Length: 187
Image 1 (spheres, rainbow, N blue to C red):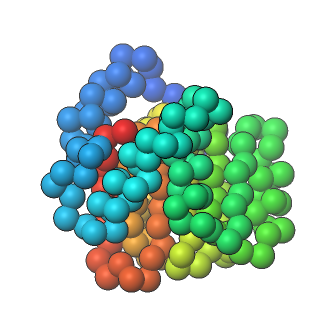
Image 2: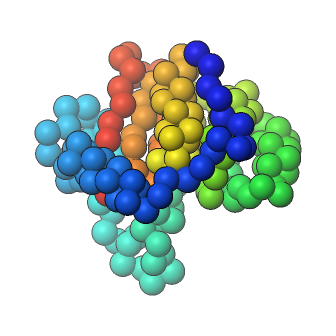
């Protein structure tokens, strides 16, 4: 499967289409409280991480996505945490930082604006991930190309479970997960 994700093709969605896309996500997403989710792992994620009210009440975490990532770190206790901010000028730096770490427990890449960069970050991180690793990518619905890259990530052999929170895509590589599953959850 090839994807034409050159920088010139990576136009962000217009506001009306973004709004339409969000409503489509919202009405297709599973309940954010865990009702109707049949995966015990995902149910636990929703109840213990996504709905962690203690962490969200702290004033330092006004951004719910930052609070979610901190809640994931507290709950899963990954060995090594990388939080990187992507920008057109920092692509090489982000890739170098990923290359220079031995193993990644949790990787969170913020402000990805280009589908090609998303794919490059994912491929670079694959060499450093294990079955307990978690990757989080921001902006998976910002453009048609970003959504296509997200779909390719979901199809990757090592990816066992994905959770789509619209602004964030969360990837788990759990070996305990026998069947590949993709969840869309309201957040």
